[in-house]
Length: 323
Ligand SMILES: NC(=O)c1ccc[n+]([C@@H]2O[C@H](COP(=O)([O-])OP(=O)(O)OC[C@H]3O[C@@H](n4cnc5c(N)ncnc54)[C@H](OP(=O)(O)O)[C@@H]3O)[C@@H](O)[C@H]2O)c1
Image (cartoon, rainbow, N blue to C red; front, side):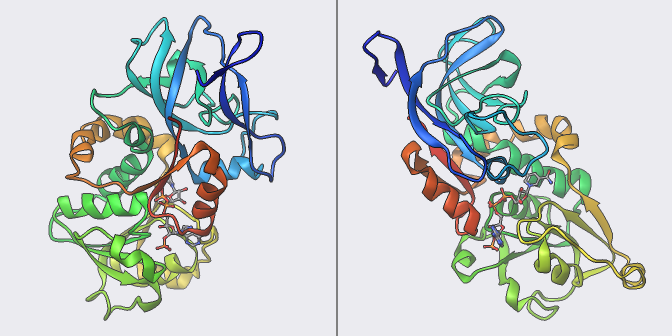
């Protein structure tokens, strides 16, 4: 516990959101009391993700009553639990964490036992809290959804981002030739070596060496529109994200002519299906054989973390380091 009040109540730091559209305030508060059916966790790391930004902005379908601690996902060490072993590294997520109940942006959290999953020994706490969504999404996109086959040509947009960079590596592992597209020149060096890196502004059949069989789009907006034109007839496009714009206008005549299948990637429905595959990739992530980019910020630097994510300057996931 980080400090003790006059009445000897142990306290620790938490980020508290008081009003939508503002940033949470860093406060010292009482450490939650253990409760039956719940696990008390000393947090080590928490993600700052696009979903969390939507919650901060009051722009999500499920929102907490304020004041509340945001943070939909994190990892830490079990301090007290009737279900999970004390001292184990765990990932906390789900059960409305950071949405309908207090979330992970705090040094101590009390969460339902069912929101806790023990991680393999030796896993980096930052990796433990960030890996599932990007690696699961990339896996679902490359395998069950786009069904990438050896020898195919795959284009990935947002290829320096967490989902994009992982999709590049998984598509290459599946035997594909990969083109990685990024929006800004500063991101070019962050595209994994497995792909040929191309700037979105330069996208053309010539710059990518001909049409592709599969597009995995993590960005949306005009980049998606331009990239779709480079998929061959009967090709597939897995649509993952819409950070750069959520609308796609289809001229039906052009759509029929182009003959490209648009495949939504929905990790809410695919999560359980990919979970076992994704855990199997953790050793490769821990050893660095597969790389998952992330930036790390102290709990007192939330503003920087949010700013980097909002502007799209962040390389990969953004993690709050909770000690
Ligand atoms: N469908 C699902 O179930 C599902 C699951 C997980 C994630 N997602 C979504 O997938 C997307 C990618 O996730 P991620 O974790 O890979 O995110 P990320 O690491 O932030 O990368 C996304 C990429 O989008 C571009 N970008 C970011 N902010 C931007 C902005 N304001 N304007 C224009 N471009 C911007 C950046 O690439 P450039 O600089 O190269 O443009 C960035 O590298 C997110 O939108 C996320 O919400 C969807």
